[in-house]
Amino acid sequence: MHTTTFTIQALVAAIGCCGTLAHAQDSQQVRFEVFNGATWSSSVDVGPGARIEFRVVVSYTGTRTDLLALGSMRFQPTISNFDLTGSDTQRDRLHPWRNGGVSGNNIPGSMISQAEAASPSLPSYGRVFPFGAVAMNAAGQNTLTEFHHQNGSDRAPAGSWARLAGGFSSNWPLPALTNVPVPADEMLNIDRGIAISQLAVISAGTAWQGGTQNIVVFRGAITLGDQLLRTLVLGAAQGSLLRNGDAQSADDSRYIAWQTSPADAGSHRAFNTVIVPGHINILVPAPSALALAAAGLLAAARRRR
Image (spheres, rainbow, N blue to C red):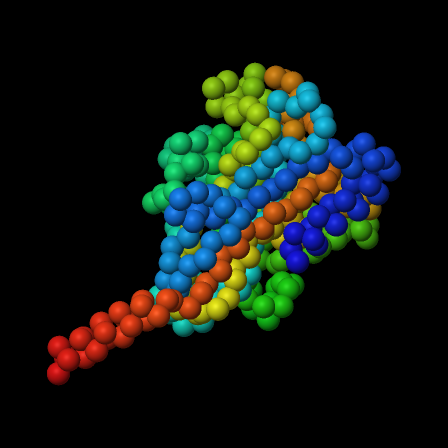
């Protein structure tokens, strides 16, 4: 459901904006992957209480051959069926953000390194260097923050959700902004999403990552609560990508920017974005595991007596 929704929206935006099939083919993919114990994948089957690593990977999938690197993007990761009931180990819990969610290329110790981006397990999480050219901090009202939504609260869809964005983005972004003038707070809600950007190579020097394929831009981890038989879907909030038009424009096509030369920080906008969600399937523990757990509880009860 999530893949279809975001793919259709992106295609409509691209064709509507540009009116040509060639521009519609100028596209990218944003994948949400989970670690299944051996490799990164789109899905993992686990039991309650498991710790699951996840990451966000961006690839250009269009036909242009002159693009050098990822320039900039915004997005707000979401997790559906997020268990918010109970306390401590009864509910789902995201692991800590590095440096308390304040990060930037020029803030020491605040970014995930390229080596860590490929690691299956980390002590803390967040954006990946060198895509922190835009700082996420209190000064920009944009410290990385975990928001919770239930039963449509703060404009969220029905259900129970976790959403990641800047600290002043408490409202779920609207799926479309076509009425002008666009309210300033709605434009800010996009800008205060997860900021992924890097400088041009002539400005960044060695703090630059070239290439257009399989770029890891964000890392996270979740420890699951005790709720069984559900699937958590990791994706991006519709309407959270950068908007092509300004506040006075009805152009609501969304884009990711790419660099085209050593002096370019991201002038080329590709409008067709396919979001590929990740899935965490929480299954009933195997009978042997249930029997073992029951035996442990019985032994503990006997010791107490």
